[in-house]
Image 1 (cartoon, rainbow, N blue to C red):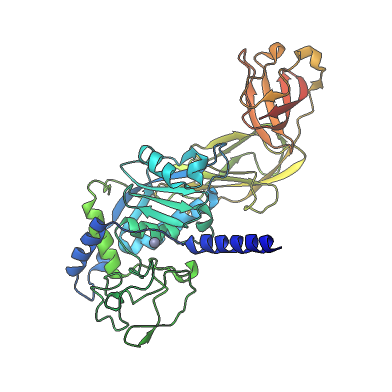
Image 2 (image 1 turned 135 degrees about the horizontal axis):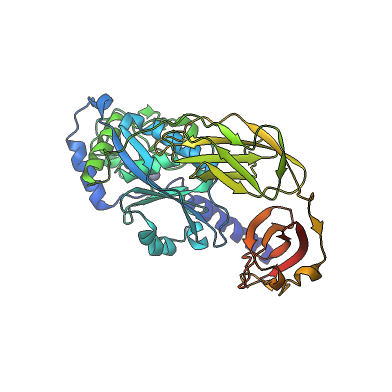
Length: 462
Ligand SMILES: [Zn+2]
């Protein structure tokens, strides 16, 4: 009993410790960055003028989505599109326009997905694009929701902190361009009184974040939009929850202060070659869907071709297909860098809705096309089911994951592989070398040759 209680207490303490360590952000600017900022802040005169006329700067962005070793659990692309849309709106006053430099990068690495510090240190340098601002979206962390790492000059954002109207990217990019927290100095406890910014701002240049148009803030923990604090002189004040660089709830935040914006512009000008003034903004129209035509019932679930008209200025299209008319649960939710896409869909007799949004490099805020729908059935007409003897056996079966599977008498045929839930895993060609399946599980393998077809059950083990 005593031991049980002790273990319970131990677990409780461990949980509290972990909870205490989990911060919205774990960024600490290095000494060089802090020195640069202090020096820059001495040159500012308040009130800041000219912030309404910051020149527009085009900044390339490289997005890395980190998944598990098995290539699963990537950051949801619907959230990514929403996030990038809002990012440019929130940076518009600063004069910054971020644009996607290349297609989205995918990384299969479970250690990086879990943001293990030694893995981040080892692989980030090779993965990052030196000619862009790099944001890595990863799966989990016991320490933070986001971080800008000065030594690597990259941002990591945890997927769950980048859902539904998030401001984590705005905050971390603020750090990237040299901004400290509004509660600077309070990250690890109460600073000495002379380093506590007073409510009247009389020591704003030397205490707190060093900006004189951001109010005093002592809250190094999450808070909602209103809080009352008392400064070292006994004056009560409320910190400004509208600033991205605080820890207030997402719903309160919508701006950088003019001095913060001036600092980011100055920081960018120190980063030789990062801004690309040759970039041209485009805002593509909403796409027109071509195929499958509306209400089409001639589709077979094994192979559906989607196509839409090219919208001038688009560099990718966001394709969504759902069975439930709820886009949050999609059969397909992907970015396509062309105007067509071929995929198998869930087998059965289903009505599918689909829509497409054109994405330009600088704008993810476009409108989705009209929603169209079609029916997809299992393809059984015109095929005669035949016995396995005709194609010969599939072997080995059970087979180890990633080991070759051979169907010697079906060379050149196409196999369609579905998992135990009827979801398509892919279409593969039967070659002399065979084909492979990476994930353990039970599968149905359909071999089709001419108008003949055979369905075999395949077991894949670790
Ligand atoms: Zn931060």
